[in-house]
Image (cartoon, rainbow, N blue to C red):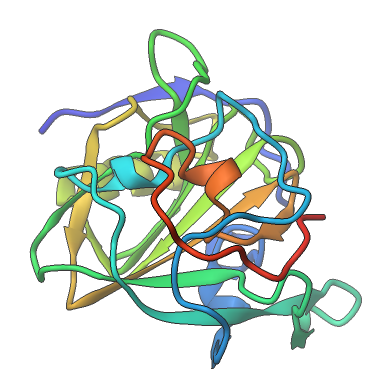
Amino acid sequence: MQYRALDVDGPATGRPAEEHADLNLALHGYEVTGAYRGVGDCKGGADDPKAPQLHTLFADQRTPTFAAVYQIYDWNWDCSCRGNLLTDPHVTLAGWSATPGEVLHLPDSGYDVGGGYEALVLYASEERITLKYTLDDDVVIGYTIHVENVCVEPSLLALYRAWNDAGRGELPALRGGQPFGRALAGEIRLAIRDSGAFLDPRSRQDWWQARPQGSSRPLEFTRK
């Protein structure tokens, strides 16, 4: 598969991407929580018709089975070290059942960063990727998605590394629904942010609004 890069606004980072906690979710880390595992109605959730729709991560556009849910650790920029677990919202990372080797796609949205592309690759390694729905080389404004336990498509990873090494004047871009990798094992993990803040990936109003309403129970959390 062929990928191309777009000019970015930035770079805003003053440190290598591998060592930047906004880009590399592995620096935060996370822990399993016993919260509800499933999609539901968020109290106070805001409907953004252009928001990324998470069912389009999968070729069959399914609402996935939740294998686990997690809380991500905060990041303390003063010491460049891990902080406490984020507890508002109660869930900041979803673990979804997947078939090893299953192709994963950029979640479709109503946004366009130019030429029909919807997102940039802000960070990529052999097993994780960070995607941003603006041309900014940071997570300050707009939606950001982190996907863990993914084998990033080798040509996309090579393109990211080439532009990262060249100073990040350009970064790879993806169209909605374009494949970016394959599930490494039986569970993939996804976190979504809006203007830097980690949000609850279970919220139907925000990320699953294109799916049938069904009968899943309301969730006891409030979106920031």
